[in-house]
Image 1 (cartoon, helix red, strand yellow):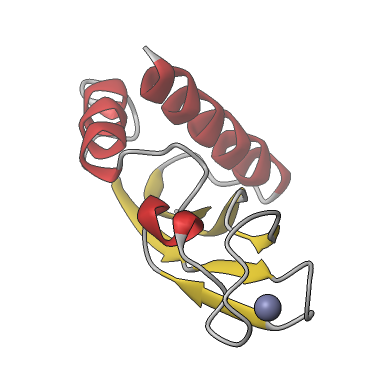
Image 2 (cartoon, helix red, strand yellow):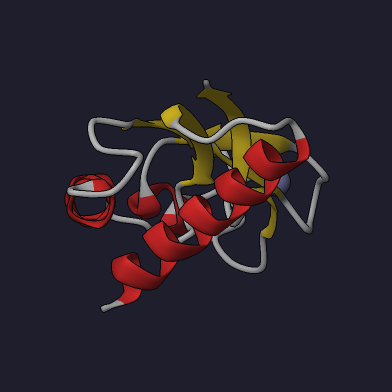
Length: 117
Ligand SMILES: [Zn+2]
């Protein structure tokens, strides 16, 4: 399952941070993800909860922050955006060009912050 491996790497990254700061119990981890990252928040939450259950991190919360999509029109350089994957298929609001927009933001997925004790 795709989300299971993402949850796993989130937890792994969090543990690396914690080891560096001498913390042992994760309380909250915040992850920022782009609309095109392929992440299904509900599914990722579910996997994360399943993964921390009965571990030292039992009860740790996962916060997911969605980054809106940002596209640059290849014809007129206008930058526009929207929420969700559908926004990728819209025409440029300035010149009407429908294809070939560059994705400037929306594919990322990174650890934002962690709280641990
Ligand atoms: Zn345009």
